[in-house]
Image (cartoon, rainbow, N blue to C red; front, side, top):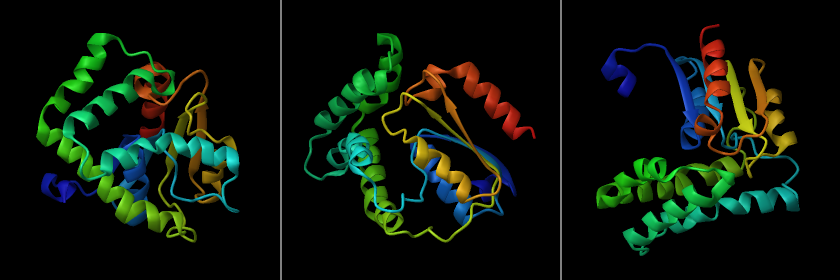
Length: 201
């Protein structure tokens, strides 16, 4: 709908975290719309086969906070505090106080916390369960995608990460050494170089 409103028939897409997840879904559901994409720091929608092992399940356990954010009845202040804790401690990221304040300021507004709650809740309920059951198992990724992840990201599973190439003939995977989850902040030069190179091809 946004692209139609802007009069865009084809787009080049860059997404991180939730933007990565929704980017994968966009590429799968509307390959006619997406010309190329760079996606970072979130699992792709092809669950591992056979079922994930214990180490993978431990890594996925780091996503448990999403349930708390999505849950009804948790006060907005509690959710805002949880976001701050994640930003301060997760994935080895070292935000300065000023940077952290820039990201956290919007969460002082109740409307922003509610919007985040609905994003997590709707995605967990409507998207993740079908994906876990193999919704896209037999679907090919037609869009040329560059998939990036830091080797220090707790979600990083090398075999599962590179398995994306089995699902798309034009899928490229690349690990950014020494980076955690927040790739654009932790490795801006590396990310910019790769984004510009991939999207200008």
